[in-house]
Length: 97
Image 1 (cartoon, rainbow, N blue to C red):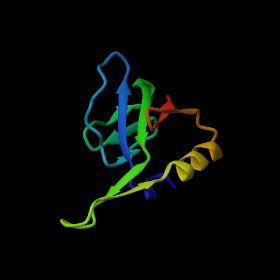
Image 2: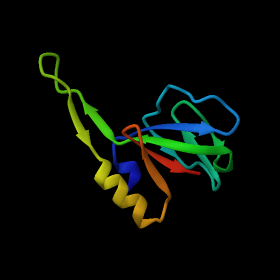
Image 3: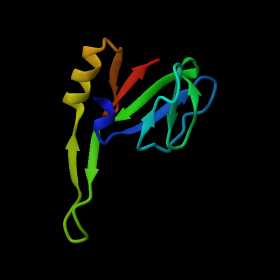
């Protein structure tokens, strides 16, 4: 399930500039709406697209470099199972809304 993966999300709302800040969670508070850490609730119909960063950066410790874990394969499998259109874009997964 998508919510089980430690991903980051960035919505593009129709007729608004692209926000540079990423959210660490999303959920669906009611049918037809989605809410993010920094936005929401937003009508799904108002989203142009949704970027998902499939790379988890895991902090190990102060003296040890952070670990990067790529969840792209799992994410693509999940999206394919539900027939969600997407594309790879600059290392991210972009969902067409």
